[in-house]
Image (cartoon, rainbow, N blue to C red; front, side, top):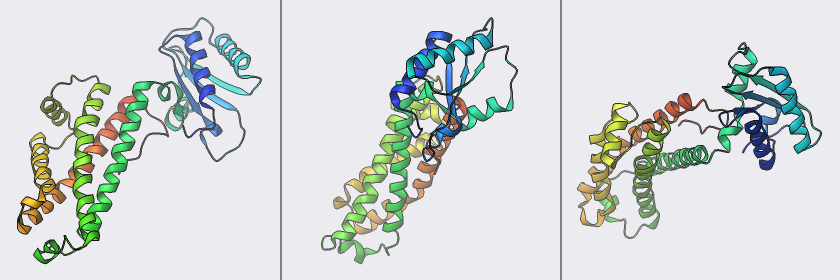
Length: 268
């Protein structure tokens, strides 16, 4: 976590909030403690419960006291929100700019966060491999020299393997995880692709399958003529922007649906 709070402290804060306000409580850390480069500072918390409280101020004071009993005498600044609380600008700022501790400690959310970051990183690597490969003039002479040119062969291998790996992680892992997070039904791989297309997450299920066929041909490039391999690589290059678009669309849709904070992976 890129926050200035120990993991056991974050766990304790969420556990205490759930003890006081129920399992559905949401807890954001905001303010100076979300700046990893800072030092010291109050522990600013926004605590949001769906349950009506008989006395919100007393409940906040008791929560603050429980935090100090567990974590030691520290300066906590607790904003407690229940359904009757008047919405204030500071509440929106805390949700938008803060880090939701209750989500960061949820295993499903952590897995989704990790998967998004893996796909973002692999997409970035693919873009770099594409740039290096297509900086060359890919003609028959270049391909005929692959067996003697280790650097050229490694550049080709990097593009092909990263293309395949990105498609696998997008299609087999991220798309089903996104559907589950959006409370959508999942099924076979083809069912998931069709559902993702209908939801506007995927540009085309049919084109996705075409990309899978194309990559199989590239993996077995030893069986292709130079012309066929060149055409396959050019076809794959046309599909790379769609892979990036799919990642960005899923990233944005999940961010909107889950109300994420500053730790959410960036778009490409």
